[in-house]
Image 1 (cartoon, rainbow, N blue to C red):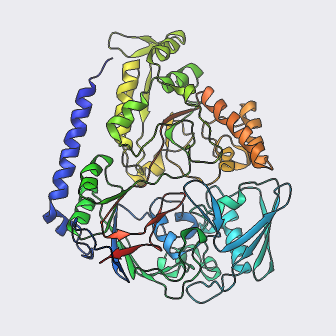
Image 2 (tube, rainbow, N blue to C red):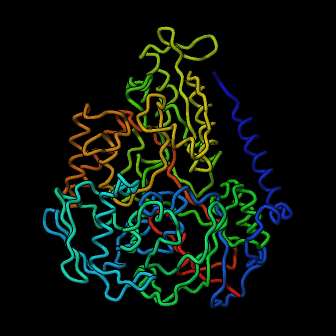
Image 3 (cartoon, one colour):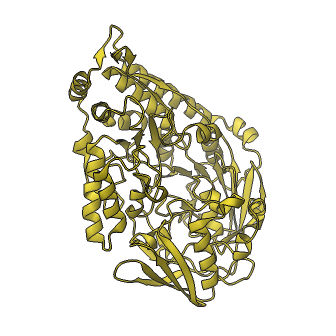
Amino acid sequence: MKTDRTAFRALAGRRLGRGLRAVAAVTATLALAAGCAASGAGSEQGNGQKQEGGDITFVIDSLGDSWIPNNSAISSFQGHIWGHVTDKLVYVDENGEVSPWIAESWEQNDDATEFTLHLKDGVTFSDGTPLDAEAVVANLDIWADGRPDEGINPIGLFPTTYDKATAVDDTTVKVDFTAPTLGFIPTLGYHGSILISPKTLALPAEEQADLSNDIGSGPFVVREWKEGDNVVLERRDDYDWGPEALDHQGPATLDSVTYKIVAEPSVRTSAVQSGQADVAYNPSPQELAPFKEQGYTVAAPRYLGFVNGFALNTKVAPFDDPAVRKAVQSGIDREEILSTVYTEDWFAAESFIQSNVPGATDHSSEFAFDPEGAAALLDEAGWKPGADGVRSKNGTQLQLTLYPNPYLATSKAVDELVAQQLGDLGFKVDIKALDVVTYGEKVTIGGDSVPAYEITRSFIDAGTVAGILNDTDGGEDWFNLGQSDTRLNDLASEVAGAVDVDERDRALDELQGYVLQQGYFVPLTQIVQRLYLQSPKLKGVSYNGVAYANFYTAYLEG
């Protein structure tokens, strides 16, 4: 069943036009973004002189539903706050490079089962208590185990091989694992690995859910917050232990950062244009070009992690058939997605992990666009086109429901285009868009009603990839395989158990190829999940390996 791409592009153009009209609707911004500090001046450029102090406002679509540190840190929303209120043991940049932070240095034994961390001396939490070895042990323990009976989860992607941590002295921590865990040090830079005061960690979950009780050691502290509305951070004047990679020591330059919830993307961008806000989070990609032309800063940092794509449920028809899985892989035109939905800041997928992840290799030939080949695969598998163009087999239509990921602003537009492309191939595709809460409840990996689960997921180190492929040690089992694919199990074990980088990279290359050859994953595009539109006066913002904006190094021009 052929569809008209011109109509899709016209629709995208109308959406863009509506967005640009909203940018000009300053009156709406004044009403809907009330409370934002008027710290900017539209598109007026700074004078090149660094201003000491100053206050900025960051307008964001949501701040999630929990401030319990373990339960919320993996969220795309709370991570902005935690990145300023807390520190991490190491810093990881967008190329996966690890450098010292609270841990000044570290070493490991030959089989990567024992690590020793050497901490900076004199670091304190904002309540004045020391961030010493005992505090680090308390954090490692709760990251690994949580307190599930109290509603406090382990943090996502923390190594399941963790055994114990021991405070050797005030600034030395020894960490033991039950098996080789080469990715331990990089994982300490993941956005869930935030250092929280042991006093906070000892609190029950309901008290940890009060952000004012959550004490970190970062360059900002929480001055005030209002659930569902805003969080105000103010500079901590005695802070003096920033990451070496950021080339800045001492306190932050800015006096405060206000995070204000404004749900509508066009209203967020309007707030920056009118000078009511300094940063708008996750604007529509198609809005960005006019802003660039006007001198605004547009930041589109890539994170380390998985590409945007579909994990296919091998237990749910029609994806229990490898031929159908491979047909979907080769029936999607990714260049059309990039040119229609995105901008030059996005890149074509080369594997199921991002190309900036150390160890990623190019396997794009495994899922190259080949509509004739895809049709032949479906023909051979017995799926024959009907009079309406929809294929069927034994009286059952070839159908698929897609659930756009609400954490990704472009997901619905991408899914609409995928639906058209697979419709050309003979699929009947439905799209069911859900809000964040309902999506979390209804759309689960491996669920009987979800044949294709859309992935937008970050990670720091490729060693964690093995934990999502099957159900070993409580793995997430993305493809609903359990232990049924012995070759996949062996490759995953090789990656997880490697004791040196070269050995792991070889196994990771094989693993990437095998997953794609079996049609378990359908890559779409490399992902820029976090977009920022910034005032021309805001300078010096940095971005870490999971693409969060860091205002520790930022300043305003006069």
